[in-house]
Length: 168
Length: 255
Image 1: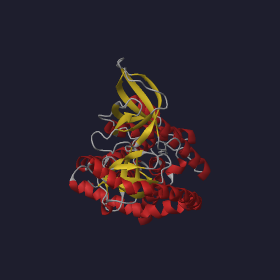
Image 2: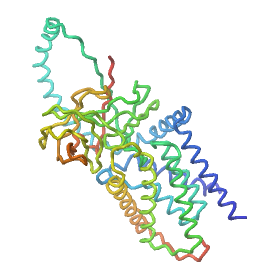
Image 3: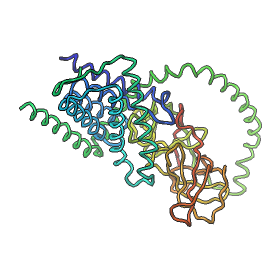
């Protein structure tokens, strides 16, 4: 039980450290993948909606506390993305291929960063659409690519799931 | 019953997040965030330092060469410097405000997607204060955004919410620069009568007092009519490479 809790906590802390220290080395044109959100979505695919909700909350709070614009902003986004994604695959018994998983991560990063941009760009002179196309979309694509690489390298198999079941 | 429990958990989590959002600007919320950032930075610092050790020996060699060149310059300047007090007295110049630079090592990037920022390894203990300008030898990096006891988050010029008062060197025309995305800055709304050249230097104007005058911001890349036909919008290539900053200087104005 304790190991089940400590494992995602440790992974989130490590990913945050990597995000802060190593991301300048792996960023392209200043675009860095959102490693924590990738982990939240993969965790939700494996453990279901409640796991995705709680890991998303923890990961979001970590990011908010260590450099966020506002407390709770990323926690709200990540927890809800983890919950509703887990809910969707449980309810419909979705068969997750690696390509579908990458697409889901792309859409998740897009949703999260658009949500954050709605808050941060208020009063800014930057055009919202231009910011989404020039910043948010490339980050989403890059994150999806990293997720795809991770799934291929680690050999995670995303098996067919029966309706109402949870991915293992 | 199970379903109700799951939705209840979701509701409690979402409500907690909204409470956090509403309380994020309170004094306690800010203090708590700053404390946790300090703890996190203390953990991240050794990792960043280890990653950079491969660059250190090369930088050391380059710095020794620079030191030798600068020593020669100092020798030439010392004679001119000796004459300055006498000349100032003659012209009864007032003392300019004195500026000190506090060097800081970049620990990492701000992990939040809502803020384009970097984290540095000094804070309030080193007299760092909110809104102090941050520069490198190349030019303006940004400003101090959040200050912990031993760490600081710097908001970069590439953040869409940061503006800086700038000036075109050739014409002296003033304006406010903002991030334009695509790694560029932009001057908005300069009068169409202003003469603009590609490659023209842009520096801080000093207006508003947020940044000292004369710090490099970038060079003009392109210009085009604004949505208002009587005004120019100017794209500017920043003088600082924001992707690869390792050390910055925080400008502390003492007078």
